[in-house]
Image 1 (cartoon, rainbow, N blue to C red):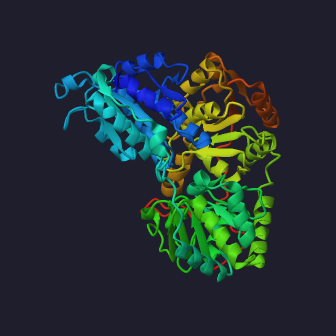
Image 2 (image 1 turned 180 degrees about the horizontal axis):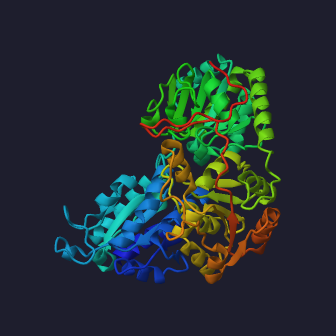
Image 3 (image 1 turned 30 degrees about the horizontal axis):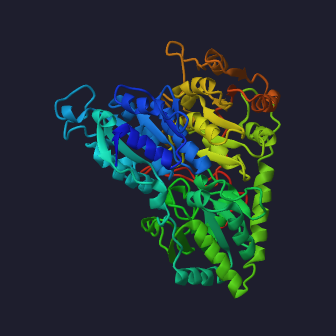
Length: 592
C-alpha cells in the first residue's frame, strides 16, 4: 500500500505499460495531471500541441506505425470536446488511444460550474464520448483508479483495438488515497488477446477454395494491423491466388508483387474491381465491407455476392454476414487464420488452384498501368494529378511513411500510390477526418524518427490544422507536407456537379469578384519557422520533394494541381437516394 495522488496512479500505470508519450493541450482541468508529469519527464514525455485535434491524430498515427498506444490529455469543456473527432476517427480505423479528459471537481457536480456538461447528468462527458470509444470510465474517487487503469488499458488492446476514455474530475488528480497499484505485466501474461479460427471452418474454407476456378483474396484493414506481410504473400503464392485489398487495407500486401491487384471500390483500380466481381470464391480477411470499398454495395460494381461464395474472416463475429451473405464465417485473428490456412494446405499437399485465372488478372493490370502513363510527363501548371503521382513514385524513399488527408487528393492516392512494405500509407478511411494527414504526420515521425514522413494533404484540410507545422518546428520533427492546392473542397464540388449539375460554397473565392483565392502556403510555413516551397513548374516538383526529404527539416511544398481532371473510375458510390455515376473506365466489359 502507498499513499498516491490520482495523477500519480494514472501516470505510473502508463509508465508501467511502456507508454512513451502524452500528447495534449493544457487547460485548467488537466494541470493536476501535468504537474505530476513534471516529476516523470525522464519516463514519459509530454508533447504540447496548439489544437487538441492534432494530439488525437498524432496518437492515432503513432499507434498505427509502432503498434504501441500513447495517451492524450485534454482539459474539461471545449478542450475535450475538441478531441472527439480524432477519437472517432481512431475508433473507426481500429487504432488504440488512451484518452484522458479532465472534468470539474466532484464537489461542484450539479452546480453548473465553469465548463460543466450537466444538462441531463452531472459532469456527463463520458456520455459524450460513448459513441467514439470502446468504453468510457469516470473516476469519482482516487481509490477507483488502479482497477480502472488496468481495465481501460486491457480493453483498449483486446480484440479489435480502439480508443478508451478515462474522465477524471479535477480534484481526483490531486487528492490522495492508500492504494495497491497493480503491476501491469503481472496481469498481461495470461491475457488472451488473439484467437485462432475454428479448425473445422479452416478445413471447410480450403475445400471451398480448391473447388474454385476464379478464387480471390481480399485483404482489409484487419490484415494490415494483424498479418505479417510475408505470411499473406506465402499464402497467395502457395494457393496461386491473386490478392486485392480494400482501400483501408493498402499496405497489407506488396502492391508491386505479381499477385497484387490493388484496391477495390469507389477509389479502386480496374484489375481489383474486375477480379472482385468475376471471382467465384472470395476469401475476405479483416474487412467490414464498407460502402466505399464495396462500391456502395451495388451488385456487380465491385462484388457479386452471390453468386460469388464468401469466406469471411474477422476478429469480430458481428462483422461476419453484416453486409454480404457468408458461405463460411471464421472468427479469429487474421494473422493466425492465415497461418492456419497455410499449415492445413501444406498438410494436404495442395498446390496452385488456377494459374490461368492468375494470368488473366495480370493482363488486366498491364492494361490499367499502361493507361496511367498518358499524362505523366505533362508540364502543365497547375500540375496534372497523374504527373504528381508518377513523380512521387519516383522520388519517395522505399522506407517512407506516407499519409493522405481527406479530399480529392485522397482518391488519387488510394488509386495510384503503390505501397511496398516496409513503406506505409496512413489514412482516415473509416471516419474520413480532414486533418488526420496533417496532424498524424507528427505522431508517425515520433514513432519512427529515422524514417522519412511525407503527408499529401489538401489545401482545405491544411488550412484547418496548419498549427501542426508550428509543433513540428518546436519539436524538430522533419515532416514534409505536400499541399495539393486546388482552391477548394473539390471532391465535394465534383459530387455537387455529378448529382445536381451545379455547385455552391465549395471553392475558395473572393466574395466581391468571384475570383478563386489561394493561400500562400509556402509563406505560411515560413512564418512558423519551417521551410516553405512553391512549385512554379511541373518539372521542378520531384526535385523539391527530394530536397525536402533530404533536408530533415519541417517543410511545406505548395503544389498547384488541376481541379478539372476526371479521374478514372472502375467502381461506384451511391449516396442513397442518389445513384452514383457508373464507372467511366472498363476497356473490356464483362457481363456475368
